[in-house]
Image (cartoon, rainbow, N blue to C red):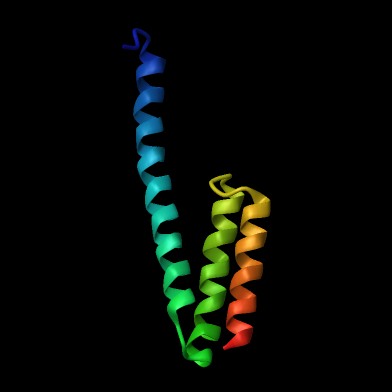
Length: 83
């Protein structure tokens, strides 16, 4: 266990960040799955920018690697275009 006050604070901050990161990642993965299951092109086209924004935010926070984000976005755009 940490003995220094600053180390205890860091542990608390890391726990809060971890929970927040888990929430953002899970909600993004759910949105991606929802987009992939859509069959209506108009609805998917409206929903796509929201998902792209979520992916970009995760990449900015280093929760997704930049290439993973680019591959996800590319695949989703192809999927929507095929509808």
